[in-house]
Length: 208
Image (cartoon, rainbow, N blue to C red):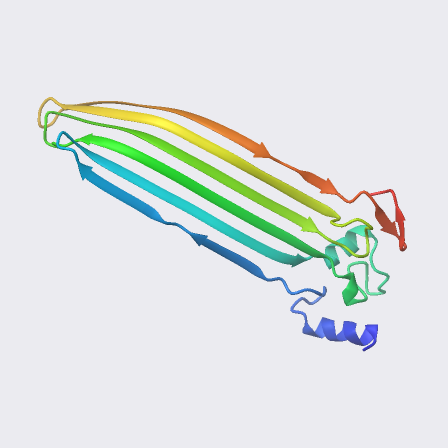
């Protein structure tokens, strides 16, 4: 099949009216969210434990052929800089995402909810981790792939203690005092990069 014949068929097959998508762009996304609650009566108080975990992984492939052509000088197609001339000029991009969240709470509450004085005290812990990356390859505009990438993540940890006491003076009057003390630590991890060599007219040069 000639290049022109392939290009005309690609134009007729694409859902876009002015650009051609050379690549399929699949996406996968999965997650699970288990949770566990345990309750126990200790006589003087009720103990409650709540544990939960969230995990998600996602990835997608996207076609950057038109965008890179428009930004970096094109492929030599008379239709315009954004139009490739051959499938081999496809520029795939990849995005990945990974998230996890873990939380644990222990809570101790006075057993008699109708007593004049009731109280609750507990501890809380959580850890959130997220990592995401993006990279773009190009067989035309660079001699070093990926032409662009980002890779970043963050880890966030929280620890807290809390308590509350209620005093019912009358049926219509109640005094409440409570406090929560917490501490958090956040650790970011950013990383970015671009290809160090750019092809101009098929010859690699030292400009981005």
